[in-house]
Length: 365
Image 1 (cartoon, one colour):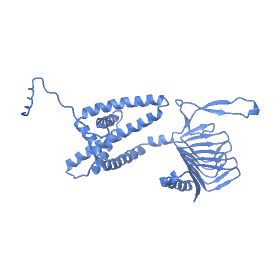
Image 2 (cartoon, helix red, strand yellow; image 1 turned 30 degrees about the horizontal axis):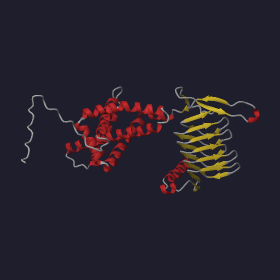
Image 3 (spheres, one colour; image 1 turned 60 degrees about the horizontal axis):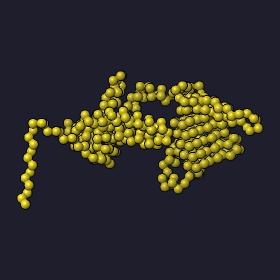
Image 4 (cartoon, rainbow, N blue to C red; image 1 turned 90 degrees about the vertical axis):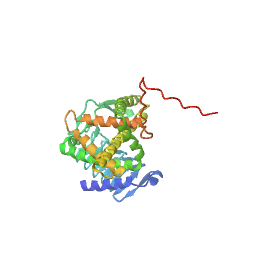
């Protein structure tokens, strides 16, 4: 089923690349070469109905009623699926919510990334289960329980004629450690170390290409006043997370907490790129290279990231260099208001015994 799943995710990617005007016109619900694609709408496969081919749901809601059959893979991107039928293929979701009812059968693998999967007692998955979070009674043997996470209640409402009271049973999310164990493997760490460095270098080139002046102002502030930038960055790194946590605890101010977190992330990224630009300029002067600003930013960011991230491999003390660079960059961003103005160094006060300059003479009347 793996080859068919790869082709099906290719269809999902092509659907995500539809023009924005087409998506803005309304929900899309139509056939695809391998089945049906639902974007921003609802889809119900009634009982005793059969869908030949796969089903892709992007930001929509899909329901597979008892007795329905999907002869293909089912994929979700940010959607909701309630399945009580048979899926003769793999089931995969990214940022989705999937509920497998007691009559559901998945004749394939179940995989999810950043998604929740609720499985009722009686649901069947014949293949492997590689899921981030599973809620409910059917948990695969490779999952682990984290006691520090809050319990998620499961509510069972009986039929009115039975006379029984609803039952609420606490459930604990089960999280598979497969992805984390893969990234703990040192070759994966080394590969991600190299890939991350080149990605940041490419991003730095793109940012400087369109915003050279603001990034140059941030870089200039970090060079002219490293002490002030480091102090302001350290204070910002301490106070901002505390404020964001306080806003998140108030529930109603959670959107402001999210926006503040994005702004703080953008400040850290802008400061990192600005320091990379300064490193690239100095490398160009040292080797007498005539580098364009975007090239200097990419080269400097690559070199700086390789060094700073490489220091992380040193136990216990490797994180210190990253903290120093990050606080210096964030402080320079704050001093220049995201590069919107030049940093003005405060004028040095005159010594006490310095002569006061005479006032200029008044013009003759």
